[in-house]
Amino acid sequence: MLLEDVPEDSLFHDSLKGIYTGALRAKELVKQILTFSRQDTNELKLMKMQPIIKEALKLIRSSIPATIEIKQNIQSDCGVIKADPTQIHQIVMNLATNAYHAMENTGGELIVGLKEIKLGVLDLINPDMTPGVYACLTIVDTGKGMDKTLIEKIFDPFFTTKKIGKGTGMGLSVVHGIVRSMAGTIQVYSKPGKGTEFYVYLPIVKNFSEKRVIQNKGSIQGGTEQILLVDDEDAIVTMEKLMLERLGYHVTSRTSSIEALESFRDNPGKFKLVY
Picture 1 (cartoon, rainbow, N blue to C red):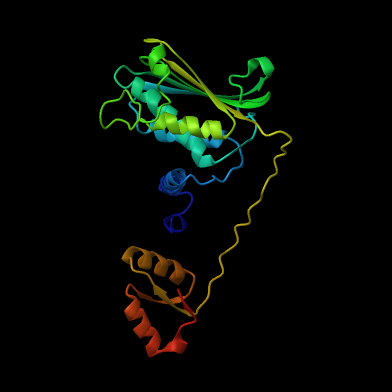
Picture 2 (cartoon, one colour):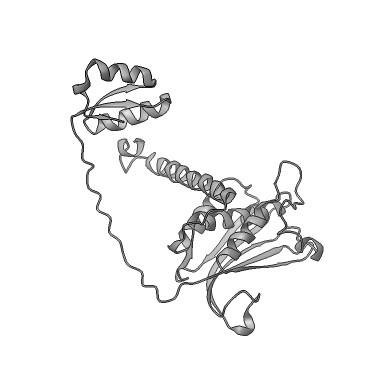
């Protein structure tokens, strides 16, 4: 509603748009957590990774110190994958956050790249992969690095080297699970004092032709009828009442089902809709 009220050339418009985008992403992340806990099948769709990666890096940039420089090498011509956008967001956020923690005290560079790469039979990293074209996401840091013993454990659930309150040890295990479920794989290279490199390979969908979808921003149809609106939360009632009144409807709102029933009994023919 604020976005509708504020002119597009307003100084506040971009900030409000950012809040709106962040709220939608938060909604999707909560949905993803619930889905993960229920072991449901995720909704996969054809998508490009570039916008998700850039959005995640904007979020990371706002929360890390200026002593860490973020460099991007994201190729615009990298192809389309079949994935859940929220899961791609999770991958980038988890790996970038780990990279940031490795450089938190010393500063350094966080380098994020995306490119298309062709893997033949001899190039395959694990036996579950098939030859073909892959999107390769790279996240590199110049932090403290890891030895071989740590690298062997990092994808284990609840394993963490961070202090209490810094992490749960679930981030990399979730990333590993997401990537494997998409028929992809992860490679890790690291040495103590030499930083860490993560390479995420996800299969690119063949024979995909991108079609432009033109969305018609038509006006929402309103009305003048009387509506009885019922909900037990004040905030929801207030918001929905405002939205409906903006569309021209006359709204009687109640937060008690008993009071709503009494209002309806007083004049049943008054209301065209009870919601």
